[in-house]
Image (tube, rainbow, N blue to C red; front, side, top):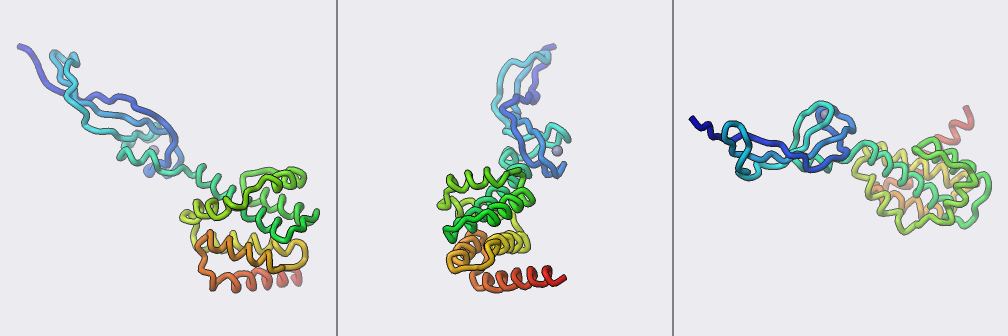
Amino acid sequence: MIIFGSRGLDLKRGQGNFYCPNCQADRLYTLKERKRMGHIYWIPLIPLGSVGKFVECNVCKDSFHEDAQYMETNANIENKLSMAIKTALSAVILADNVTDKSELAMGSAMINEYTNEDISVEELEEDLNNVNLNDLSQTLGEISPHLSEQGKVGLLQKCVLMSIADGELDDSEIEIIKNIAIGLEIPPQYVQGIIQETLEMLTKNQED
Ligand SMILES: [Zn+2]
């Protein structure tokens, strides 16, 4: 008797990093394609066509729709956030065309505290020559969908703190802060209030 039938054969089609919804963490995945193979005596013979592609988590082995490979990793989001904070703070530092040592010191301290970078005052000074402020709105636009309202306000507050490192908040700095708010999709009517609140917070901290 000839045993003829079909079974699935999973072919490896790729791999990469994704955010596994099951592990709720960044994981390696394998992209697989399931082919239906005809067989005689369990020897695969005839490819009967593709059943479809799917993504398998290398850790929990759960499988997902192939679009899951595009699930953005936490590491990627973290990088975007770092880039956004650094670009925004750089824009504030450059706003008034006066870059003094105290601004640079505070800038590097804030970047080191809030991003995954470790940058010296001298390195920041060097970076400021190369920063492209035309990228500001795009950089902010990429992180904005990942931030809560609180996260957006927090980022804007850091920029306000940075802008008064040189002792005053001038018009050019307010202008940049408004642009950063637009990039983060914070409604313009809230900006003045956020600036005011940050200044009051600072005064209160200094009194304590
Ligand atoms: Zn998993």
